[in-house]
Length: 473
Image (cartoon, rainbow, N blue to C red; front, side):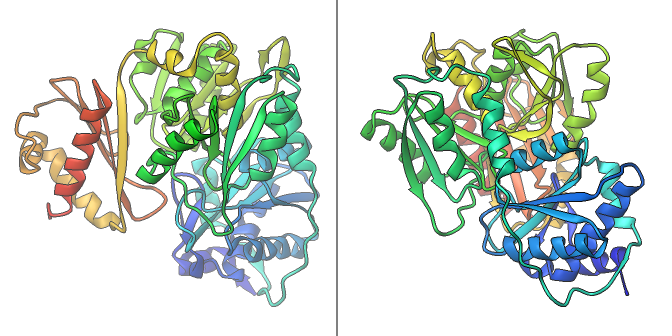
């Protein structure tokens, strides 16, 4: 017999910002089974259930990982409901309605040679305490020797689309031309029918047979140029896309300019009359300065930290939500939209903010809606294949003498007014610019976020820091 915590420890797989992540080579059948057994054993201490749902993204490694997870479920005498390729929020939503736990096989935006597992309780996304319980569980199981065949159930896809089409009139998007940048997104087969059901004319753009690691926080220059070209070529009013597992949106306005995820979240929350927000520390400060919300609290980066704030906020406010700089919108309470109730979905979702933005855009262009916000601009990028030990060493030096650190990076006129160590190192400068350095929780990357008075300055500072920091040590 194998023991879950021993197998997990030997694998080297750890929980990151959202879910367990690692190299595909680390996710052997027994490692996937160990995580599944540990997760289910933890859930059985709190919930009664006879089924476990599983879905996957379009990574080449995901089907076999799902089969290994399914085998573990079957070893426990439980029924597997397999939803095939589906967006993470679709899996989470249907499982919450059915009051059963679920497992999403996805590495989200990270490269295809990596993958991961996300776990959901019957009442929503697991907490950081749940993560530790899974890592420490001592569930015993037999080694996986054969993988089961799985039959796809389309219930998750159907209910997810109905969740949103039921909120709006079927002519809501009449006259709109919407481009869907499909690439390898887990939800690519759902989005065109959904927008068409709301009256839009849809143009499918660049579906890929190979996995494309779209990072909504670090949009590539190629994707920026594509959006501008598509917008002009097809006369588009809006472009919609997501990351690999469909929980982070990537949307462009009528000019083909991609919106930052936190600006999209701000507009969505405003359109839904949300009273209280929980957002990560990396989000744009326009959220507070726009004065459209009764209360805003800042958290560490990662959906579990945002969700952890919902219970306290719900005690004081009727409508509660959160969003991240990557655009994922988390609905922390039931809310009324167009006189219809939409159920809480406390996990990142890509579709809701896109539709609420389009609802707002009935009377003003998207560009106009954005321009009316306080003009603070955020840009971010990352150094890939940058081991966490290097990142940690750099941050340790910067924390001790931040002004000296910036001078060593040749930012000679920068003086630090305030330091926030909620997650990484976030330095507010006397001039009003904000520089935030943080190791990624999902991959060996160092991320740099800069907020400034214009996007050109923000981009210049990010590029300058990342270029110089490589040589820093």
